[in-house]
Length: 157
Image 1 (cartoon, rainbow, N blue to C red):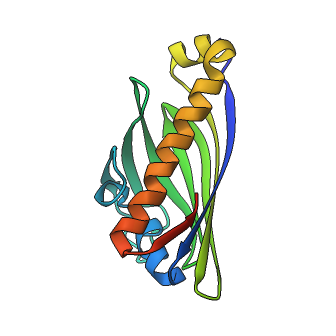
Image 2: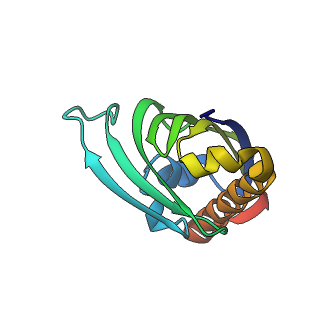
């Protein structure tokens, strides 16, 4: 069966300092502030840099399904860049890039994954637009969660 590749790009803007936003994005514990997400650390690399640390995520979505995957940190350049490798029901890579201009922090997330759920791949030719919409809804919750957690104004999402 064909595995469908998804290439998403999400952009958020917050009226906040980059360090405040990085504390949440780079902290990886998304379940603390992202509605519909559970997260647990499943491996901690003995080094202090976070490279190799692994987390298990379950994202509950607006549609009646959830997606679970493990994320391994492969690159960190605090407070500007975090890259993960995903395995599980979603497989691929995700990269957070943060920039600041004045008092505004721009967050860009690139998520390039294959869906490994058989039913999703079977229905993707018909339901792909719904899956994309669902992804966007989940990401909107993330933006709102950051804004609420740090008390920042969400300028764009």
